[in-house]
Amino acid sequence: MAFRPLTARAPAALLREAKPLKAILGHAQRLGHLQRLLESQLQPAARAHCHVAKWREGELSLVVTDGHWATRLRYQQKRLQRQLQLFEEFASLTRIKFTVRPPIVQHGAAGHTMDLSSDAAATIQSTADGISDPGLRAALERLAAHAKDKT
Image 1 (tube, rainbow, N blue to C red):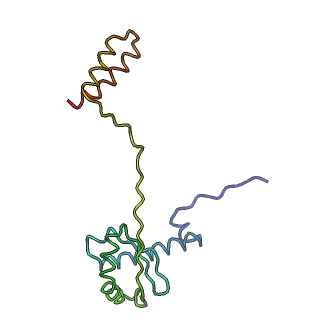
Image 2: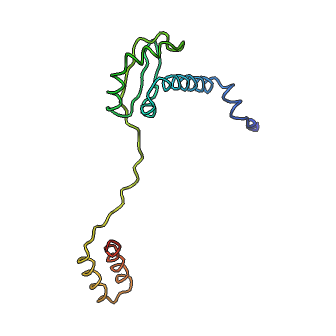
Image 3: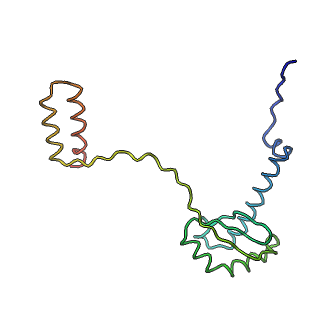
């Protein structure tokens, strides 16, 4: 009995036919639509800091990037709720919940920074001048060069 792999299918066809993927895609599209409706009622400066997380049973959960924006949006909560209720999608809106979640930022490895005074660089360079080993001498000269960039 030989194994015959399935023929490759287009991603669009998979998204339309596979039930779990279709459900995920449909949910993402609904959240995207709700996000666009929300953004239409927010101040332009607040749009990048507020995202729809969940819409269920009359409660709209919003994720806000920091406490400053959460406070500003809480002050505007009643107005925002009234404006959103005018949309058919938010007709049953009874509560808006704000959750602060800072964006995840990938930090690169912190490089070693060298603050070398010109006196220290001169001392290292004079030491390098008295070294006969070429590898060690080159390493000390590279080290001394770090301060030369600043002067």
